Image (cartoon, rainbow, N blue to C red; front, side, top):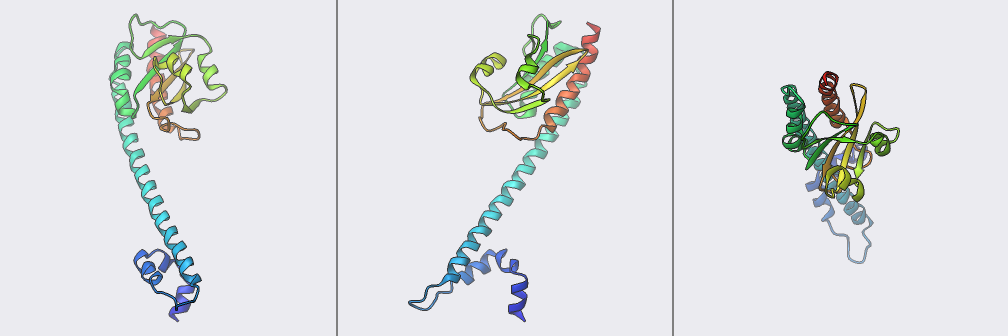
Length: 209
């Protein structure tokens, strides 16, 4: 009966690393090739791999939740900005820490109504289309020339999101030193959430100017 139960529920043994290790420790008779030992060792490796993967997924989920919480707090603080100067200050000094990056830049096609700025810059018409094509956003490696143009120095990777406010196009750009922080296929929900909030503020201020 016990044997039949184990055949029908092999995960009882596979998921119990201690039991599986104990079973694997049983040696075969001298001169006999223990194929079962090979199978058990393979199962042990699979169990260890699955546990490591589970821990990695859990860590990734915790990091994402922490980043989401910081982003939500940052977006709420954006609502306290009463002009472009205040927004520029927050993008330059508060956004990087909140979004977990080194640099945050906001580009608006054409001239900007700001005389001096740190994060909000004017750019040529078509910049967003040139970098994004038909897409709304991009995550991945940052080419050296593009990096120097957007950020003034070479960055490892970046995330870009199209901005449309008051009939003008623009680009929200987040840059990181690490080459693998942003990669192809990465989710962009947090990036788009931040971009849409900034759009709402720009709509009002750009229309007034």
